Each structure stands twice: as C-alpha cells, then as structure tokens.
Length: 315
Image 1 (cartoon, rainbow, N blue to C red):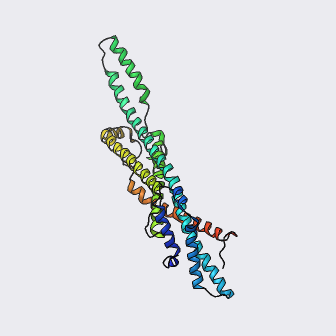
Image 2: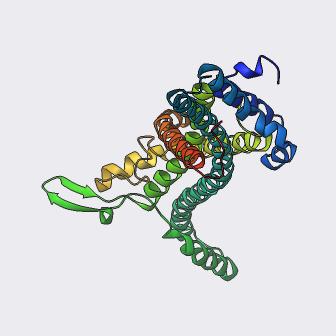
C-alpha cells in the first residue's frame, strides 16, 4: 500500500469506489470485478491511520484506537451503503414510476380526446338532424349516421351542475372530477421521478464532491425515464393548447347560457397543463427527504455491521 492511500479519508475512499462504479455497465459487473484484496485495502488503510494516531499500549490508548478505528470504518461503510442504496433505489423506482407516469399521461390524453370527440359528435348530430334527405336511401344513411353519433354524444368530462352541491346563495362546493384526479396523480408520479433525480444530485454533491455515483445502466435508465416524461408532457400540453384554441368561443358562449363552464374543470384557466419546471422544483424537497432516509439507513446498517462479532477491529 502506498503512502498516499494510507492517508485517504473514508470519503476519499468512497469517491474512488464511486468513480469505479460509474465505469461499469451495471452493479453486477462491478461486484464481479472486486477482489478480496481490493475490498480489504481501505479497511487496512483506515486501521493504520488509527494506529498511527494512538500507537500506545496502555488501556486508554487501546480504547481510543478502537473508537477511532470503528468510527472510520462506519463512516466508510455508510458511504459504501449509500452508493449501493442510491443505485438500487434509483434503478427500481425510476423505471417503474417513469413508465407509470407516461402511461397515465397517455391515458389522460385519450380521455380528453374522447371529450373533444363527444363534443364534435353532438355538434355533428345537430347538423345531421337538420339535413334534408333527397330519397329513401339518403334517409336511411342519415338515420344510420345519427345512431352512430348517438353512441358518442354522451361522452363528456365537462363541468356540470351535478359535479357540485349548493351551500347557499350563489355558493356551490365542487367535487374533484375524474380528470382533475388523473392530473393530480400524474403530477405526483412525475414528481417522484424528479425527486430521485434530485436525490442523486444531492448525494453526489454533498457526499462525493460532485462525482457521478450511478452505474451506467442506472444513469441511462433515469435519463430515459425523464426524457419519456418530458416528451409525453409536451404532447399533452400541446394538445390542451390546440383544444383551447378550438373550443374557447364555445366555452364562453355556453358559460353565459348555463351559468357554469362547460370545459373540463381547470381547463379554461390552464390548470390542466403540467409545468415540468414547477413539478421539478417542488420535487427537490422530496428528494432531500429521500436522501435523509437513505443516509440514515446506510449508517444504521453500517453500525450494525460494525458491532457484528464476525468483524475484527481490535489490534
């Protein structure tokens, strides 16, 4: 062991491991690359540091050596555990959550598209009803078309009086609709993905001096999940914008007639659109909470391992 390695701190050893991990395709490939000597080297180096600090043979020197040796080992094991937990947790959660968020956005887009089609079907039915046919065949086709349109006329997610209850004069309490709940759930899933991204950055910056900590496949999976979400959100928001341009005049007219908006709740005000930057910003606090939990678990596991009778730490 060279002189530089005998002076490395637990954090510096952990950064070395992070740099190694980031070279490998996945955690399994990295673990296979480890040799017993490579695993033991940091422990021996930290033990040598404790011996250099407390070389005496008196009971108080031995106690001080044992305390420092254990502390250094626990600090190292905590960071190693944090590396493993960050890779495992990010791999498991981002792929699953990212796919769920993309699927929910796709389903949400389809539902709102159905609402638009229902609106179009109702308008078309009114026009077909007024159409004057020239002969029996045309009339049969007209009736057939009306029957087909009737199957879609009732498809609507627009705000209705039945979505609320009166509380007094000009006051109504409104219940969340299917669309609003869907948007809320989708935003939560998106926030979960960005929370893991934020957690990785916090761990890298705070505990590994900015060095990447993820295996290549985990890093690529996180990036792919975020890209999928961003593209899906972009498609969804573009459709909402197009829909608003198509129906705004009708919404305004219908609201004056009925006294209540006939758009999907929140749509007229732009509340259904998903602001990625806002979701990402709000996810930072969630990411910090994730890190707090991972660090606590990593240290607890390290402390338990340090107390194991199988670990030799004395001299």
